[in-house]
Image (cartoon, rainbow, N blue to C red; front, side, top):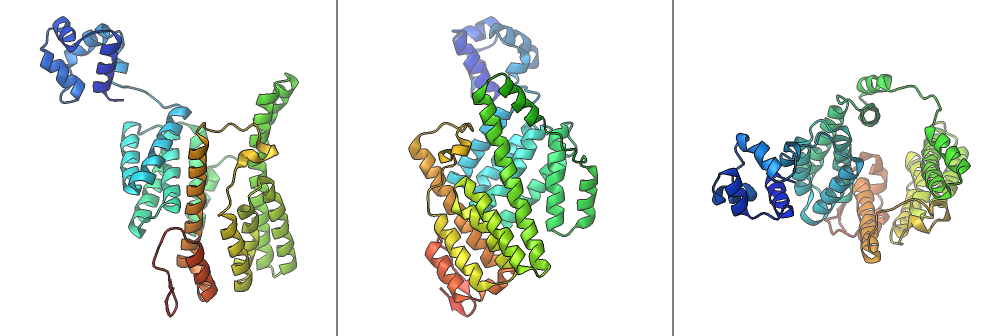
Length: 369
């Protein structure tokens, strides 16, 4: 909220007209009108009398807020995501820059805005330049988080940066970030909170925490199985890799979403450069993305709180998300050198043409589909 909006709102709350405010402060009515339109601001000598007249304080009048709450950050993230969906990634980029300038040292905001910048190019149609620009600004924000005073977000940013440098094979930078992270000590205060809530018979709160911990634990196990399966391929143990892929599939079926269940097997097939197997699994993944997915339908996550919205909007959001994932998956295969072997197969291009939601010029070796 800007100062002009605060003045207008507080004046109305006090039941005052612009003329009355002008009279009591010894200024003209047009001057007050300009304050509320944002054309000019009150003279610094009038700030204290104006704040007293409007029964507020100067900090509120100047819209000074030292930090943001988690709720504020979630609200801004939602606004920016909606703007990106309706007006494009450039508008989202502008809004992020605007909010970051307003709160340049708020670690939680910088971290979340960086995450949004990384995620939007995956979910929205973007040019190569937009992707480059978005990723570069995200890295800049993560590096700024690292200089903040909030140790939780500092370590989160270091973790993300380390992961990024590993992907880019910049191992010196990655090792520097890893060395700055605290050693894992196995202590998890969530379990203590769960134990206390259960002792107090606070079933609803205990169940919510249990489900959140279960969610993160399942995803951690899945990622470990994925990595183990990849290592098994490198070691030439195809049988073990296949078994680990099956375990990963079984673990992710807990979420009742077939798409995620197939991803380990797909990773194994990619590592083995088994085009036939890749095509078989890819078709299953694309078909799975056409089915509605509701985490709340699982008995394992019945207590996890979700943002309230009408059923129609939830369905629309779910459909859009599945469409974006589908398009992002196909785009990655079309562009990433890892999938060179798959792009040589005409069957892949037929799948891309069949399942892609966003029309694009699909080019395969030797022609266009």
